[in-house]
Length: 41
Image 1 (cartoon, rainbow, N blue to C red):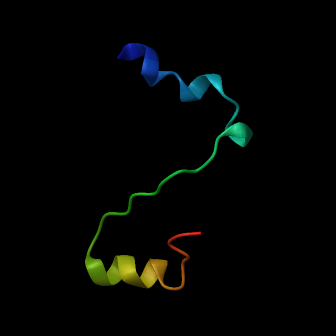
Image 2: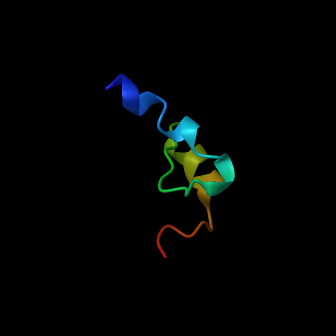
């Protein structure tokens, strides 16, 4: 699937939509950083 590795590189950054976010760390630290964030729209 090497052709998929460069798929996003072919599109200018301003044209890409953010579809997800992964956060890893101690739960209390992650909760503190994301406090008040909208999880769904």
